[in-house]
Length: 113
Figure 1 (cartoon, rainbow, N blue to C red):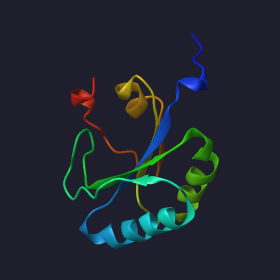
Figure 2: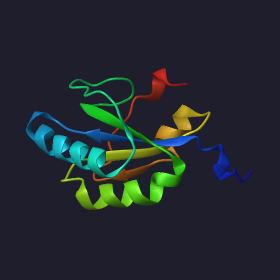
Figure 3: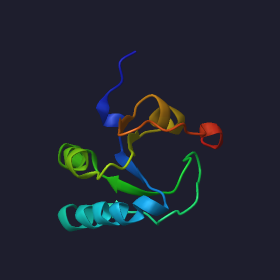
Figure 4: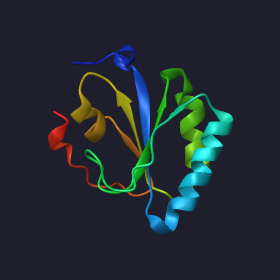
């Protein structure tokens, strides 16, 4: 059954980093804040939820996708980034309806469903 994109309430980008790449993650974060009206989540210096490494979340509206995602593609500084829609199925959003910039990381979605 085909799904309508109207079911997408927004998007999340999870920017992953480690101690060595935290400065790069900070530059990406500053660039996002300077250019877009996005919500920047807290820095999580340890794995949280389904995410296997340190990250922060970026929340943006569906109409911002065409600006935010291409900017991340060009300015991710080698960081791995998960981009997924926000719908009523968090597991599918994270595993099946997502795109990865950089390396795809293994998520633990057991707590999402």
